[in-house]
Image 1 (cartoon, rainbow, N blue to C red):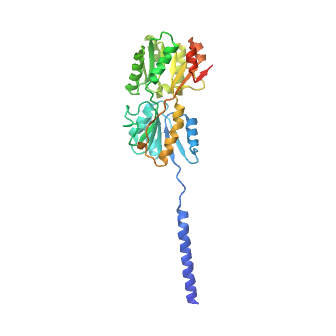
Image 2: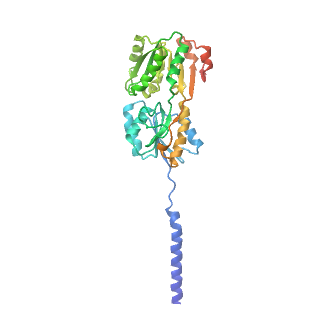
Image 3: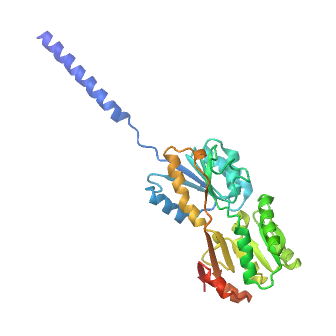
Length: 325
C-alpha cells in the first residue's frame, strides 16, 4: 500500500510538472507590440490614413501615430524631434525639409521617412538617392522644372510680365531660392527675393517691399512659415491686386489665391505608409531608394481673378485640374 501511494504521488507530481511545462509558454506569451510612428510636420491626415488603411493598418488598433507640429516655428523642431525620440517611436515621418534636417540631427538610429523635400542629396539628407544608407529614406518632390513651370504660368496669365517677387522662409537654404531666381532670369523675368523671418513675420512690410520694387506677380514657395501665414498672404495679395501663384498644399476651403501649381502633396501622403510598412516588416531605410513624387496639379480660382481684374486665358483654363468658380 505504501509503495502504491508513493507511486501514485510520484505520478501526480510528474503530471503536474508536465502540465506546468505545457502551460508556461502560453502563460508567458505576450501580446504583439503595437508599433508607434511619430509624424512631425503638417500632414494631409486623410490621405495618410487612407494609405495606412490600404495596407491593413488602423490607428489605435494595430498602429499608433503620434502627431506633432511646430506650427511654422522652426525653433521648435529640435525639441519636438527629441520628444519623439524619447517616446521610443519605431519610425519618424518628417514632412518638409526643415523637419527632416532637425530629425536627422536628433537621431541616427530610429528609421526616418521624409517627404516634401526638394533635393535630399543636395541638402545633405542622404548621400545617394538610389541607396541612401544610414537611417533615412523617403520621397522627394524634386521636379527640376517645377520652378520654371510655375513662373511660365505667371507669364502665360499676365501679359508683358517682367518683374516677379519670390516669397519664402528665411530659414530655408539659399540654394532653393537661387534655383527659383535662376529660372526666373532664364525666361526673361527680373526676380525679387522676399524672405519671411520668424513665425509671425511682418507681412505688410513684405508686400510694401514688393510694391517698391514694382513686382507684377508673386510666387509663393512651399515653406513652413509661408504655409502657416498662407491666408494672410493670399489676402494681402488680393488687397495689393498682385496675382499670386501658391503651392497646392496652401489651398483650403476658403482659399483666396489666384492659382496654385506644383507637386501633389496628397500623393506623397498616400505613399508614405508603403515605406512605413516595409520598415516595420524588417526593411532597412538605407536600402530603400528615395522615390520621386512629381505629378503636378494646377488649380485656378476664377473668383479671385475677377476680384483682382486678371483674365485667365482659355488655353490656361484648359490645363487646370480644378477650377474654382
